[in-house]
Image (cartoon, rainbow over all chains, first blue to last red; front, side, top):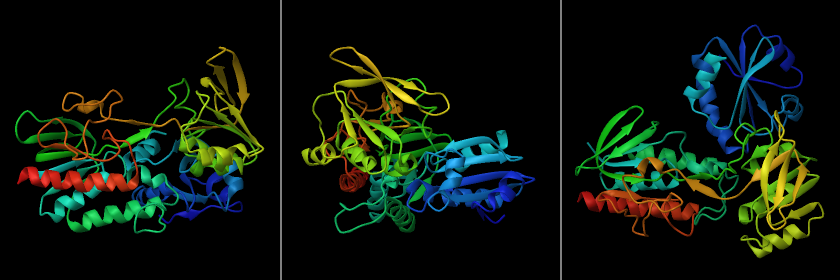
Length: 104
Length: 300
């Protein structure tokens, strides 16, 4: 599934009112570990078709980062029915992220 | 049977792989996490000879691609143990068992934790090991840096331009870091030095709210309210699984001289995990070249 770029205007509809599990990747272009994580998150978006994957550029959308208390990047937050149910901080392997999604 | 198995796909390990494959050897690299090692956290590299400026990510990705293109194999498996009773060595990973003529250990080093309760839980919730990565999230807030080396001083200078207040907590009176950095830091009006002091407690449950600091001379304790703590107290190697295989020093670094040989035949060491004085990107690459060629020479 295509990755959705989140901003202040679309996150309510895309995350809070989504009818499926949503994985949000908070990142920035200058962050090395974030760029390492990008291809992993892209693979997950292709393989786990029941999960919607979104990205937040924290430089452009600092309000969204603040709202979810993001204090380091990369941060991944998993949402179900608009609630944050799991999160992970730092660069993780694909298996670890898939486990987090499946166990949440 | 491989000619060379390398543990760790950081700068040292991948450099060793390049020299191995270019010498016509069959080379396999194991990496437990992601390629690149510590350099991926560096925003901009400006001290690598021949490259004026490059991001740590680009450097690591180019090196990774170069290693693959030259014909080395890289597997993302965690090495669990190495058996070297016989001339050929067996490397056991979470994905299988592999035979090899030589091994190069390039396991690197990680940030040293304080070792306090709640530290792990608060990482990314107020505790950070990377000021350049996370500093911007603490704009206008009070933070502290713990440590006395160059990284701590650089972190504090960087944070002083974002944060309302920066405490520099250090266990000694004097700093190991460069005098020039210290002078720059001392000119910042929002920096306060808390010297001869150790952090004894982390406060806050969901997020960090402060630290308790103890003066080691007077034993007096004080609480400092901060939203961010940047820990820069050095590095630790991670070689405990090799303790029975090769000699480690007291801190856990693998004992090896500039020839990158260990006390075990056919086992070499490269990069930050070796006992050495200078741990830089250039010296990691240099170790990789030396260890890679030493392994080739050993095979003959």
